[in-house]
Amino acid sequence: METAGRVSIRSRAIGWSLTSWVLFAGSGPLAEAVMVAGWPPAAVTSARIVLAAGLLVPLVAVVRPRALRFRRADLWPLLGYGILGVAGVQLLFFVAVERVPVGVAMVLVNLAPALVALWVQIVRRTRLPGAVWLGIGSAVAGLGLVAQIWQGDRLDMLGVAAGLGSAICSAGYFLLGEHGASKHDSIGLTAAGLAIGAVAVTVFTPPWTLPAGLLTAPTVLGGLHTPVWLVLLVLALAGTVLPYLAGLRALRDLPSASASVLAVVEPLVAAALAWLLLGQSLGPMQIVGVAIMLIGAMLVQLNMSEAARVTENREWQ
Image (cartoon, rainbow, N blue to C red):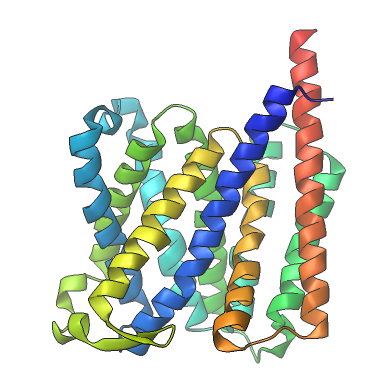
């Protein structure tokens, strides 16, 4: 059995990871409210990242300036984290959903756990238990049932490529985040990643080119009428800064292969919010898909935990 201390650390890390994905899922209704007011999806992504960086970077610079100090050797991993894990995954996902059904795009981006597992096994030469692969496959298959990917018409290849690109960027988020979280302060790494991501997204969608009236345009959120700028602020803080912070904190103590599978929580929470806020209920086949996803995620967590225990025992022999 694992020691009580290791179990406690892992449990807290799983809690941080789940918190991250719940917050990411909760950002969906916020982003939808902004888009209803006339904002293009790419502009919403650009604005949320730029605002998030604008909120966090100055705060960290004042409160914890040492967290923003990085060595020259950290430059490329840091750039990769900001460009792939912050900007790339979101921009490419929106390109995908504009060209293929949302369900298909969700399945494509959630291939990231398989890519992470392949990297761990091939590049790091760390053998993963067969049950981990079974769990990853089950999670992706369950997501396919929830997303009802068979309802889409002929697929646009550029949209499929964008979805796969988003999955690669998402895998980069986990792998580079795990690397950075083991060496740096999570707050400083998040601030730097958001700053780099903000620069990257403004190259493609400069937020200041949008009509000024869109910021003050009214929208409806949860039955309340509110200006878009206020929703964007909440989206930047609760839907961007906090989930990235929680995700990196989780990656300090949770292997990337394990953390990536917990990302399946995001579409599940999004579906629950759609049911609570919009009255969009799941059908019988989708409920089966939810069960399969949860079983897959549990398989990965239990077997990654066992693999970690075996590794620890070997190190002490």
